[in-house]
Length: 181
Image (cartoon, rainbow, N blue to C red; front, side, top):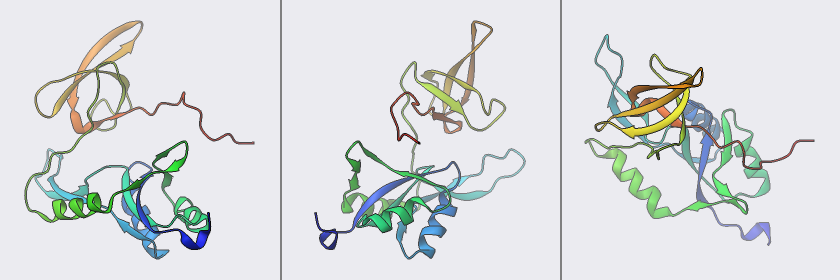
């Protein structure tokens, strides 16, 4: 394939946790087109009520590129960038219509519900709240915004109920990744 015939497409870029804004700004400085969909939500702080802008998909943003090897490397060398989402053959592009739909969604003043669907038995990490840092096993949803997580300690399980937004899946580290020499 000739690099002259590569056509730009949208790709999903995985970022370090809470680095979406840093990566977005870094890519914009490199003149790479970026889309970081954000929504307005009520702050979770108990001491004050405040509306804040947060990423619609925490840990991810969209990048438009033709993925020429030089530009691909520029994207991945951006501070906070982890990898382009894809499979064994490489990054998978996102349809233009999907990105346009997301652009429309985030401009509308109204509630947008997001979240990760967990399956029973899935390993999860609690990222906020009193149980932050705890790795457990997802058990079930309890209401619209709460989940029950089993935490193993001393050969026994304890159940903890946490906000669904405070839990994220633990990456599967058993799958073969790039080898370093």
